[in-house]
Length: 443
Image (tube, rainbow, N blue to C red; front, side, top):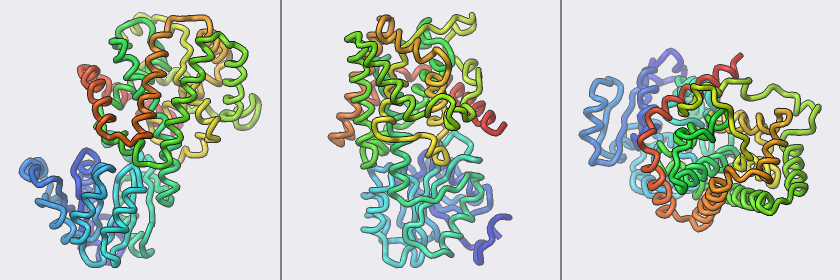
């Protein structure tokens, strides 16, 4: 028996193949092999020697030279490659798939993945895709794992569920289209917000943790998660935004919301700004006093206050009043598109829960939202940052609308290089922040 959890007939001979050994592929290989499953894995052929050396001590993991060999040897093959490359890679290796095998993918966007499988896989192959809704450095235990039974028997689906149960994740059952809609709702706009923050701070040549303006819990989340995103590979976010047809309208609306709210602030249209933001608040969070409003907050008081890269935080420097344009635009965007973010919590990433949590904190804490609107009209302290944030949000939206992968990569890379010296510390602090939030959810 491959593991204590392996309950289907023939499990002891069941081989799992991984095509693509990036960070997520390696995480899956280690987790599955530790549970006793036999793993055949590969990446590009020029990486063969390096991967073989890296996994030489893992007795259940065998590194092969290419996807043809993995496809021929495996009962269940997982493509863990960039969403933009999935069509090309499946076209190359799909025809070599073992007779009667099960094939799936780990991309964050299922539309091109499923199309590639339907076009290039033999008709006798079952298709069951998955997506772990977290990054490779996050413990998968209790995190959402989407399973998509696209073309498969119940027996095949049972085998996949059994194999992946060792991750300890919460299984969520969706269609490919449902997956793309929900990930667009929960991830696309969230990523756009943090990507735009980074571009804004980069444009103004500032490291926000070095000054006194960005201090406090909300600012800790903004800074740490912005750095966390720019510390990752560019294609993760580009693929989700550009290839997911459901994401285009969300990112476009976020840019429009940001621009229109910024105009209202610049023009001093106080009443119109307040009316619009409060209408969005009621639509997303419910009326004050309603059951929806009275629900338990996502972030308990003070849970993110201690996770700061800002040296001034050690002296208990007070948080400066901020209009929090990014948070106002997020809620305005959700309102305009009719998105209720709480409806997708079962499929939410830790990053999304943090972002929704601080947004909820701004809109539900007495007096905080009114202070934010006052600052937006009267205070010019953050005007330069807000201007660059608005420009950046429009820039990312245009990139997505034109499906410009290369432009996205270049925009991402130049800002990534600017912040690179602080990635190590930020990732560690971000991990600690996420663990604290996850622990608070269990209480």
